[in-house]
Image 1 (cartoon, helix red, strand yellow):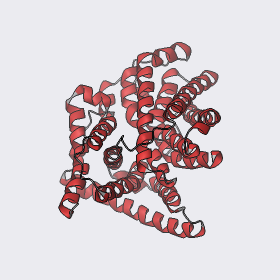
Image 2 (cartoon, one colour):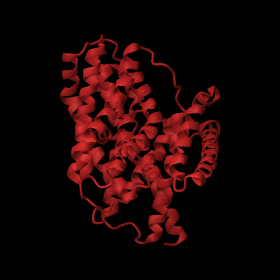
Image 3 (cartoon, one colour):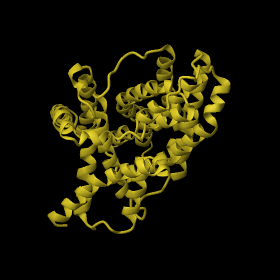
Image 4 (spheres, one colour):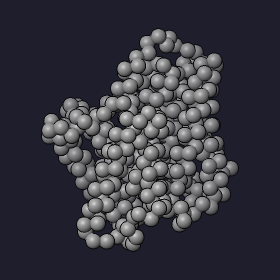
Length: 388
C-alpha cells in the first residue's frame, strides 16, 4: 500500500460515520437501528466483500486508528459531564443496585459458562465493562487485556445481537410488565421535544463544524484531551517499568482517573460538544474494528457458550434490578431506564424514554450512564483479575 492509498483509507474511515449519521436523521428505519449498529453492519460488509487493499499495511492502518480512537474518546466523554449526587432517592438506589446487579450476574454466570469459553476471564472482564459502561469501556478493557482485534470484533458482535434482543423485549412488553409490578409515577409530564432533542434527531455536529464550534470548543477540548493522554502515558510508562507488560492497562486507567478529576474543574464545562466529539471517535472505532472482522478467519469456538453467558447476564441483571426496585419501592420507569442505560449504554436512553412517554427519566438515565462510563474500566479489570 502506498502513502496515497493509506491516506484515502484513513479519510474514508473518518468520513463514512458522518454519512451514516446523516442517513440516521433522514431515514426513519435507519435511525431506529442507530449509527453504531449500522456502522458495524457496514464494516462487516466491507471486511468480507474484498474491497479493502490486502496486506500488512492495511492492518497497520486499522490498528493505528482503533488504538487511537479509544484514548481520544474517553476524556471527551467523561469530562463533558458534571458528576454530582443523584437528585432523588430512586435515582441513587437504581444507580447502585444496577451496578451490583451486573456484577452479581457476571460472577454467578461465570462458573456455568466461563470454563467453556476461550480466555474466559478476559471475556467476563470485557462484558462487565460493557454492561456497566458501554462500547468505549469494552474496547478500553480489551486493549488493557491485550485481546486480539478480530476476537474483540466477534465478542462485540455477540453483545450487539443479544443487547438488541433485550432492547426489543423492553420496548415490546418489559415496560408494561415493570409498571404492573412496581410503583408508577405520574406520566403527564411527557415532553416530546425534550426527548427528540436528546436523541438521534439532534445534530450537534452542525454547530461543531462552524468557525465558533472549532475555535471556541473543539480545539480547547482536544488540547485538554491531548494533555490528559500525555500525562497518562507518562504515568503508564513509569508503572510498566515496575510491572512489565502492563502499559496499556495503566494507560487506560490513568486516562479514566484523570478525566474524572478534570470533570470537577468548572471551566471545562463551558465548552460544548465534548460528548459528541467523543461519540464520533467511537463511531470511527466501530467502523474500523468491524472492517477487521473477516468471518473466514474468525474463531467461532465457544460461540454458543458466549451468547448463553450474555443472555444469562442480561436476564439476571434485569431481574435483580426489578427485585431490588420492588424492595426499595423504586418506581418502574426509573428502574427500567437504569437497566437499559447499563446494558445498552446512554445513547439508547432517549429511545426508551420515548417508548415510555416519560421525559422525566431522561436526565437520570444519562447521569447513571456517565457513572457507568466512569467505573466500567475499573470493574472490567477487577472482574478479570478475580476470575483469572
